[in-house]
Image (tube, one colour):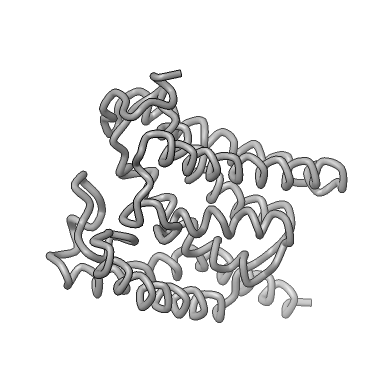
Length: 243
């Protein structure tokens, strides 16, 4: 129990075997959901999957705060739900329960971008089999899985305006988070400084200029995520025009 839920665990090494295995498992689960998307549209299986995934992520989040409290690590500097992935994890739970389009578009763009960046370059201090290891990979993988499920199974599709609304809400979050960081000394959304470990932010210049670069990168990534839907729409319209 101490190894799983203790104060600290073994150090995590990026792209070690345990990192690669976690990524492989996530990819396999995503592929399985896409492959069985028709089956998962059946009401019984659909409810079980949505409620099961929502419950898993809720228990993870509750477990996170239990760990904070039990180890004496709950502080405003690190425990508020103001990291982008923490916020989109909570929104993913609501999305799975209520299937709301506005939740979907934010989770699809902001959640997927943030979670994939975290999975590729994890800001993680502890390794398997510590609770944080499972929270990190199951939580971030769950965000991407929610976006894939709502797209492939539920049939939700982002639009041009979804990109604009996502960027708008990201900037609203920045306006909220920056003063919180200033007041508490926190680094939510990495707006106060870059993470200590290697990340994609290392390529975006020094603070505060990397924040401006991040705006451009976020917009471009949103466009790239939307591109397949745009191309499919154009192809579909072209097909209809030939008849």
